[in-house]
Image (cartoon, rainbow, N blue to C red; front, side):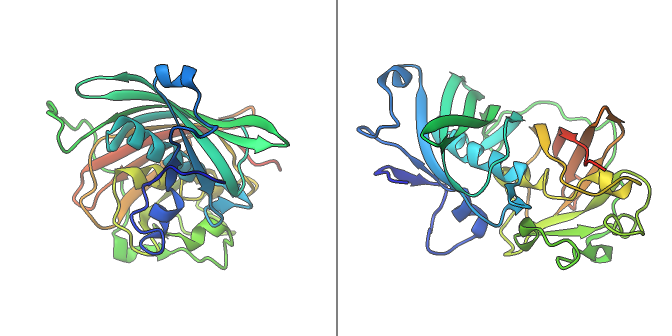
Length: 297
């Protein structure tokens, strides 16, 4: 991967936090083959990145991690720091290696910008699109906001200190070495014969290196826990995401975040999983929903 562009999102490539290094992107500059004058007039910007090992499940990059890469490029292209909403379609599995990201700024208004973002791989000399997302971006710190009202409370999740630290030897997938997922004791047996029988997983999320949680890392958190379906009486296996929706409601204020994920329906081998992310003070941070393929028995 060669470029003379500017690195975006990694303040210290030689150190710092893993998530920042591993979601950094490089903006292509004039003269690079990735720039097309036709796209420039249509507000396209092109980036290079590397899908880094260690954020995967059985060699397939985690969907939240891939979305974070797209978001990093979109934040740079639009100048807006927060992904307010994302609707992402996963077109093919992605393994570690170089990739390209294309950002088309569809609209840039006073409060929000909208961008269509896609990830591409070079496979045998042919361009293959593997991910596409429609993002709305803004700046919640400087946002004028509006009325707030809560029609439902936070989910019932055990306190942080009462939750079980994820046993990486019991669930040897690479992403477990990068994130700490602490499970509510009621849901901690989801990979064993002690499964609760209810398709729910609750707990707390933070990074192993204790990187502060910000709006960008919430995109990872919404897809970092094992599938809630694992607590039901069904076979365990890879649960590939087909599409993932994300909505940002508030900015984290520090410390681990409380997560709850629930599956209510499994039909024709397709399942939905609804997620909520809250801070320790009871403030809603984000909502998510994904459609995924159930494991094959």
